[in-house]
Image 1 (tube, rainbow, N blue to C red):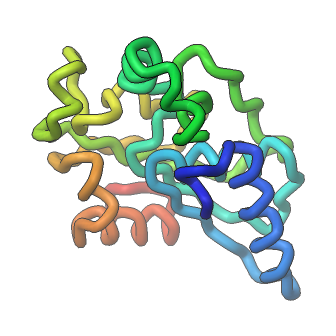
Image 2 (image 1 turned 30 degrees about the vertical axis):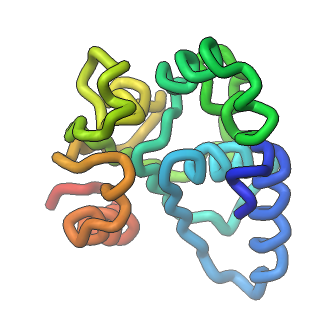
Length: 175
């Protein structure tokens, strides 16, 4: 996705086009997104009936906005000209509506709490160095888990992959 230079709406459109091109039969599609990718999935679900979407997992996604984005834009307002997603990442940005489909897809949330990134020094709460754990929570989530990883690595860890796989198969991270 063009997430560095693309707005949330543009990235949602790219996902929409991709899923439309993959449309074949009755196949169920599960969606997994890391960070801004989770917001793209949420925006897609808000704009589409998405009958074929199964379960969704959001990894390190700032579902309630990211205080770090708020701080960044306060000191570097010109950054939004280059990093288009910043407006969608703030806590005061336009909210993403709930999924259009009812009932919505089952959603699992994975948050990290290893704050070893330099950006984490601006965060006072439990975080993965970019997103605070509480910012990842989402009303209606089916399951939630916190892992001891940093934001830039949590989605690459084998432990995360195993939990995502379990959630996509069962709707729960635990057994």
